[in-house]
Image 1 (cartoon, helix red, strand yellow):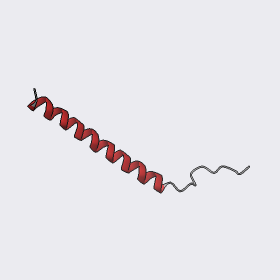
Image 2 (cartoon, one colour; image 1 turned 90 degrees about the horizontal axis):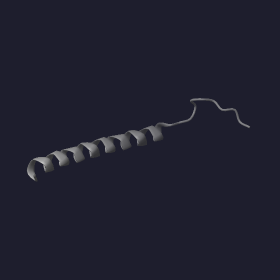
Image 3 (cartoon, one colour; image 1 turned 180 degrees about the vertical axis):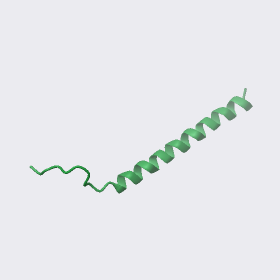
Image 4 (cartoon, one colour; image 1 turned 120 degrees about the vertical axis):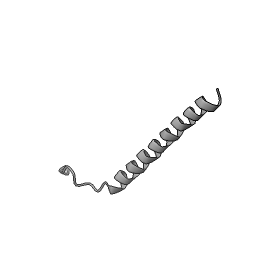
Length: 44
């Protein structure tokens, strides 16, 4: 069996994908919160 060497795998693609996903989720949550605040002010 091959020996495992910790920390030698190339993970730049996974890191970039994760960072993009977190940016998307953060912006989506902010947009949803702004929409809820707007609805609370103008619809009620």
